[in-house]
Image 1 (cartoon, rainbow, N blue to C red):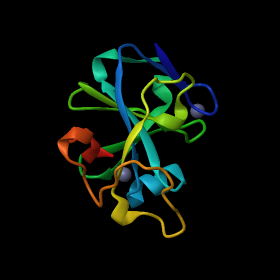
Image 2 (tube, rainbow, N blue to C red; image 1 turned 180 degrees about the vertical axis):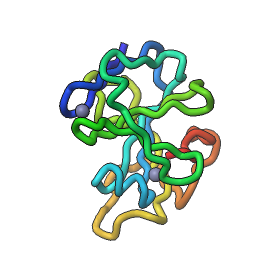
Image 3 (cartoon, rainbow, N blue to C red; image 1 turned 90 degrees about the horizontal axis):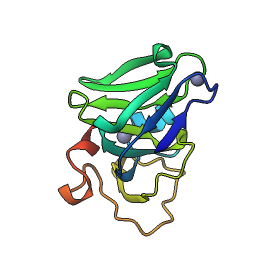
Image 4 (cartoon, protein in one colour; image 1 turned 30 degrees about the vertical axis):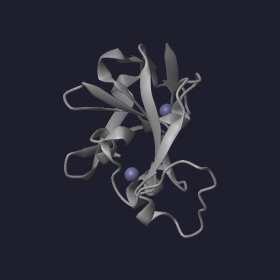
Length: 142
Ligand SMILES: [Zn+2]
Ligand SMILES: [Zn+2]
């Protein structure tokens, strides 16, 4: 079991079952919503995801058609989003309270990278969406 929560602690969630991977997205929307150089996302089968507290505090914002961003209305923390009718969940990795076991595998939308940010690891980088072996199509929603 992997647990996560928001900054104010009112929203909590957990993931049962193995997560798939973490990716780093450098697109301008992920940078804005995270307030950071890039967004880091844990991907997993949505069937293993559930809210354990405060789901009613979670609101969504449609940053582009069909692409939802979720946040805690108490503190503004990024929150998980269920996609594909709940079959897939994308969890902002910074919200995790447990080590998910998996590690980042790729940087995506690197063409949109912040000018002041330098990628210092050896992971593969792609200007936009990655090839299938790096988790497409789900990474397209980041
Ligand atoms: Zn909160
Ligand atoms: Zn992004």
